[in-house]
Amino acid sequence: MAEPIADVCLVGTGAVGEILAKELGSAGLKVIAFERGASLTLEDYAVRDAIRFITRSALADWARHDPVTFRNLPSERAVPRFTTINAVGGQMLHWTGQAARFMPGDFKVFTREIDSGVAERAKADLTGYEISDWPIDYDDLEPYYERFEWEFGVSGEGGNPFAGERKRGYPLPRLRRSAKMELFDAACKKLGYHTYESGAGVLSQPYRQSVCRRRVGVSNTDRLPGHGYDLRAFLPYGGIHHAPARLVR
Image (tube, rainbow, N blue to C red; front, side, top):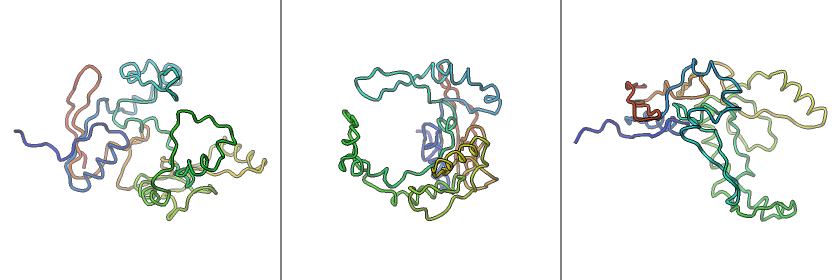
């Protein structure tokens, strides 16, 4: 029997696969990851336009060869949904960078909205849905939210009055506001509404931490540190193609 080439094999290099590769590699394990799509470059993004990638998204390779359908209820007719991509980075390449935490009440939907009678008074039709409280709450996840934000490099300043308590602020200041955001903020304040900005997984200034990211999409694949993270092969449509091994340390 041939000698094993790795301690752990990961199939897929999206958000979860990339984080696992970093954590396992940093712990001293030799990790190999496989992806069935290509590693996109800046040139791949240079030709993006709304007609090609939004209006005609059904023509995209990952949609034509690997379609996904979706429906809310069993009685509905499933329709195509073009939200996935087969490439190094996976769905992270489509991620808009929103990095907001769940609010404490999100973990108790049944208690707060069903058992309390709020849904009934609102005449909400919940036929076919099974709703229950989470077995954990915000405080259980807070340390992990913080760890991700500081490892990944999240920009923000808080300000949501309904948000859960933070033990630590954001590692980076908020992003620069656009003219549209300034107009929206002014209009909200004039109407008596309180605005705030949620965390963004986009760097507002240089940030050097253990997870480095390419600025193609918001993928954090390439320069993942660790001991023996090997992106060994790409599997494009039509068969398996073994790309040159790339050892990432």
